[in-house]
Image 1 (cartoon, helix red, strand yellow):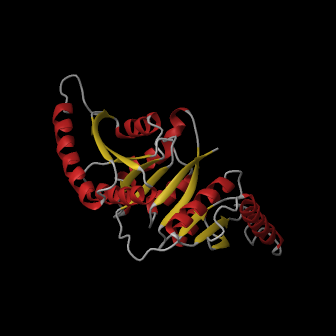
Image 2 (cartoon, one colour):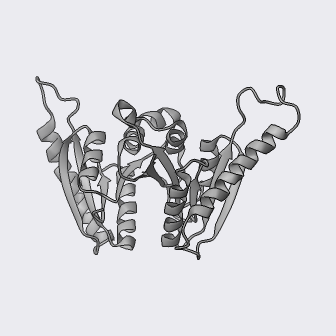
Image 3 (tube, one colour):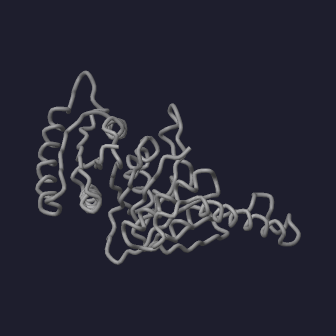
Length: 284
């Protein structure tokens, strides 16, 4: 790893929130920050190219970002670059090429339509990047406490927990481990007698949490850990648990080809509705 945090920055309010978040993290972890403005030339044609104007605008945006960084985090080494191309492809490629520890992007949520459109870049970056991605919503950061980890009992759960424990230790905050389970479509009460199925599903989810906890190392014994295993849609349970959290940690299974731009339904829904910064880990 390079000890570098890459930030995708466009000068928008959500971009500024994401940059401030990255600067605070870099200051605490003694990392460098590289701020990247991507001039989106994916719409250019042979008849007309906006690249020169977009790149010129990017230089202006980054000059203001540099002043903001010097003011808020004077001890953090900050560099900036203007690149051209598709924002998702460029950000992911740049983060991978320098071996970034983290790629940070902003997002904001208003109504349902805007959640589906303005969040597209951040969701696609989280799906495609080969490095961990932090998606930071344009929401107040004060009065937040705790790290939430979402696990499902898969082989990736231990890695997610280890990262979440380290984040909680860094922040000096407690860790809340959440695992949600659901009932198979044709196993509702009308089709199932008694509670045996429900008990078995809950026991399996609880066993998955206990197994994952047993696999994490003893590096941070000071972190207070509590667990929740509940009957709920996983994305809904995580969004609810992270309502006042400092950070939500989830996993995304790596894919190849065009499918690498698609998140699983849980991760996708969490990012569209996330009430806190979300750290997406590449797993699998």
